[in-house]
Amino acid sequence: MSQRKKNILRQQFQADRPNQIWVSDVTCFKLGNHYLYTCMILDLFSCKVIAYKISKKNSTQLITSTFKIAWEQRTPEAKLIFHSDRGSQYASRRFRQLLHERFIVQSFSNSGKPHDNAVAESFFATFKKEEAYRKNYTSEADFKWRVDSYIEFYNTQRPHHTLKNLTPCQVEDVFMKGNA
Image (cartoon, rainbow, N blue to C red):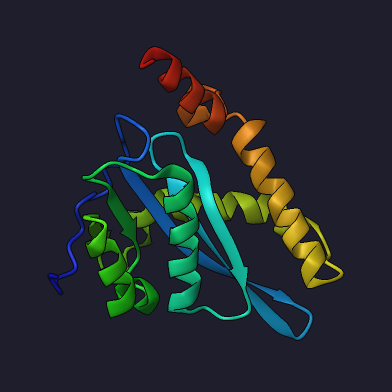
């Protein structure tokens, strides 16, 4: 298992099919006196959020459990690229081993270059603008429910300019129908 952190994507944010490239990021929200961390994995082909998880800890466990959700839901073929920033959780031996066992190529943003993970960063910027910063959450359960609702909206109802005004689910449906 290589320890070198390569940026394979080099800001080329295109995929020809689902499950070719996944991008991921973690963001933090303050709720009362504590923080909640949200990890998200997005399929670069359709910009669909394929897995997410919320935790009180920003840990390798958060990253690995989110990845396992995505893996179980999608079961991608070989040659999947998994791209993220260089956060210690993504670079951890445990997470890298998990990817290695599944023959997944890991790609990292360059240090101090958030544009290298622009699609994942953009999702969280959109989520914060359209949902998180507009609401006062009354509890952790309320926050989780609203995240669930927003991601459902984002995937199934929110058209994207970069997707020719289709939703992520519509893009995947069109692809599947064309390849049936």
